[in-house]
Image 1 (tube, rainbow, N blue to C red):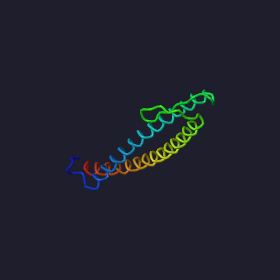
Image 2 (cartoon, rainbow, N blue to C red):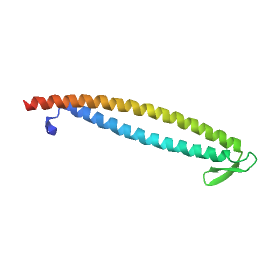
Image 3 (cartoon, rainbow, N blue to C red):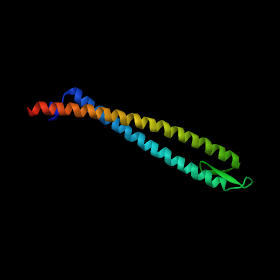
Image 4 (cartoon, rainbow, N blue to C red):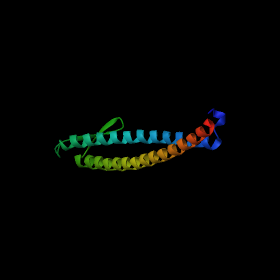
Length: 122
């Protein structure tokens, strides 16, 4: 089947399928980044828990290191972890929805292509 023989509606559906796959790939990359950030936050919390309450703790503020209270940093890290968890959950739901859309559209495209092929074979 040449490009000229592909009906416009089918070309449109193929373009939509391609767009869904690109969106899915983008979501998966974002989710991977969020999960890596969450892992880094977990490591930071573990290390911070090794520090005694009265020991000095520093936090990066741009190119500077600023002295902060251990409890403040722990609270900030916990908040960031919760935010990461929420973002990961949202991205997982988007990923699932896009995968379902892609499977459904792929099945429709396969049916359309099979229908076209059987018409040309006869």
